[in-house]
Amino acid sequence: MPTRKVPLVNDHYYHIFNLGVARQPIFHDKRDYSRFLRTMDYYRYENPSPKFSTYIASIASEKPISGKGSKIIDLISYCLMPNHFHFLLKQNMDKGIIDFIRKLCNSYAKYFNVKSERIGPLFQGEFKSVLIETEEQLLHVQRYVHLNPYSSVVVNDVEENSKYPYSSLHEYVNPSKSDITNQDIIMHHFSDLYQYKSFIDDQADYQRTLNNIKHLTLE
Image (cartoon, rainbow, N blue to C red; front, side, top):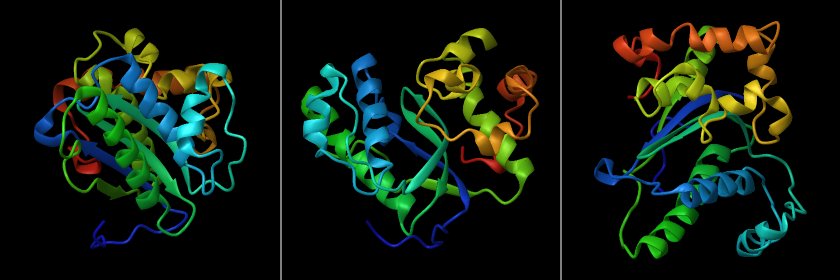
């Protein structure tokens, strides 16, 4: 992978985005989304074990990752859409984000190509990144990520949006379900889950019609 023009810095937050090549779908069915989520979980650690193929084979028996090591990134939020994905990440180690995205996308592309009987790149070049410079921007990007299914008209209303299974929003509103996202940096801004959900929902129609925070994001 070529050196990035602007290096990604430890202890900073970034909005990460990538799109399917030629804007083609990168997910065809629930199995694809599930595989991507499992791969995300695995590669956020420095030295996960067992090896990935063994881990995937053991999923049916619900065996956890037995050896994890330190997290190379913190996953603050995510949203998987039919032809692209969004992450809000914190880098914990040198090249943590680059290594995470490289391993995730390479592993998933191999799986997808075999399953779909296709060859060639799955993703559209190098992933895009935007440095989060203020807390206001952090919260706006978080909301942008969590509203993506609604603003892209993948779901019809905000209640469907909060239940969208391939976004971390449902983890935030049902925190007992999550061990993937680190929610503390976001939730300390809100008194409770209801206030957070209102923060998301109150701007849903505005984001859908005006897409007013493009200057803070990637699309």
